[in-house]
Image (cartoon, rainbow, N blue to C red; front, side, top):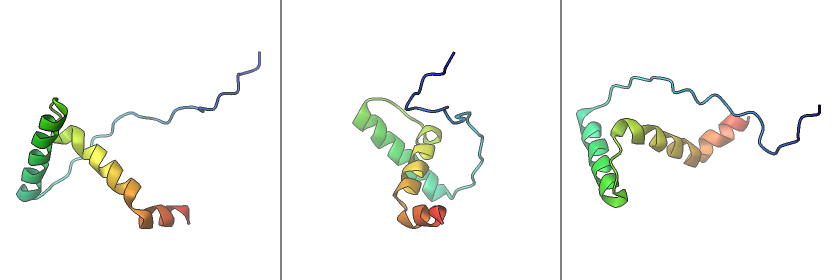
Length: 72
């Protein structure tokens, strides 16, 4: 039997990988403040450990120098 031609190919591995970062206390306080404001704005709590990966993804997606270098 022939496989159907779908626009979406095989999904990438989305298994979380544990990464431990050491950050300054001031940055931790800023991240906690962001999480509090996020909870107020969206009516649901999300901890720093949940928000930080999204923040990093957004930062990397917005860094045009990084995207250009990756294409080379």
